[in-house]
Length: 513
Image (cartoon, rainbow, N blue to C red; front, side, top):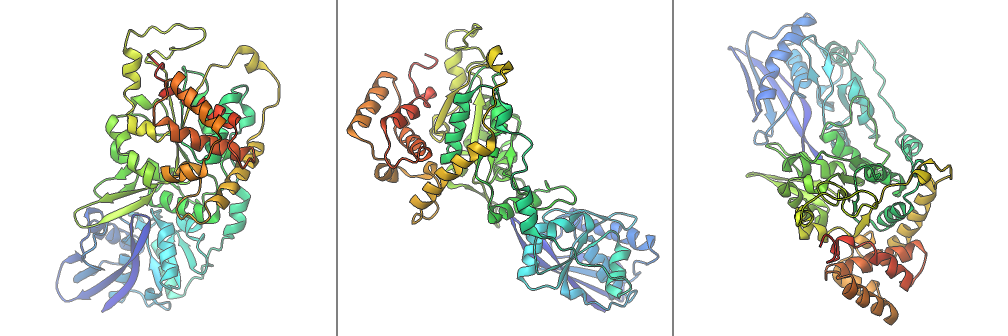
């Protein structure tokens, strides 16, 4: 007898449905075909133990399990539940009243028949609805995540027996319903940190506000303990709130990577990722024999913070250059390729030298001649090219630290950022793929960032006196356009240019000279 149902395999951030067929016939042995990996092949033993635990049996006949299409590699342990249910139906141990073929079924079995949570539930649920299936049977820990998708019966079960009872009609399980929009709106700004907790550092807050308003990448240079990490952690709180579409994109990536945890739901706040400097190339940008999203994709629609930038491996930083431009990462293998979105803001921090006290107002740098220059040279020019703002961070004095003056909250700063972003949305309305000032190509900078003769003279003087490199020119114009947007000014005035010029510290020939 033939039994058939459906599962799914996730490639990139999208799912493809897999047909699971089981035939029990005369003969011996268990055969699992359809290009399964080791974890799928081992399902035979998990399924047999689970069935015995609830009084069922593994047929002592020839059992053929086919996962189609047979030319796509199947990975992971999530096919246990559909294989077990098909074996029970094909061996006539159960009589189903609900058709297995109407459902997508996924779940990993423990040896006692309980179900363990799986990865990639959201893209599978989206594909199941798209293909018109009646419902999605899955572990109860993943049900909340799948319920984000409406018009699909999401049935969470805890054991294989519960799934059997549901299909035999012995037990009714109400589909889990989630009001996605209400849930999203209630958590949209639920951040644990806030800029109002930061005393002093007004110039750094201003620089991060500009970065958020224009989507600019930034690097903070300062001694240990100056507050670089603390400030970077608060940057997501002043970015515009996620749209529902952005939230779904972000949640899909975290679901595929298995980062949501049990009973997770829609991600409503902008992600903040801060990998350690010992991270490998594949962990940063994504990859592996079966490609998984890396940190740059997990930071999609949010912030990627690289602390102690010169300590990262040169190769890891270099592979990040193209995703910074394309806002996506493509991972190719011999037979196929996957693409992960990677539209993030890069915020980096670094000490000015190995000892950390070069240019410190109170402490003396003990680094030898040429050491500072060598330290900064660890960051390549092409990567530095993609960073618009260079901000020098100085330690907060005792008086500033103990002052009780109320600081601006993230909500107040965010309102200004949203207004500046609205101006940019209108400006780039007819430019597909460009949403912020930071994304402007060089030709568009010339058209949009027009400056007066006085502004041109100021810029020429600054570049000559400060020894700014040629690459600083476009960056200064982009940042000055963002500063003008924050001031709701149609023109780039001299004061906007002057403020933008001071954010190019690392381009000065005198720096670390």
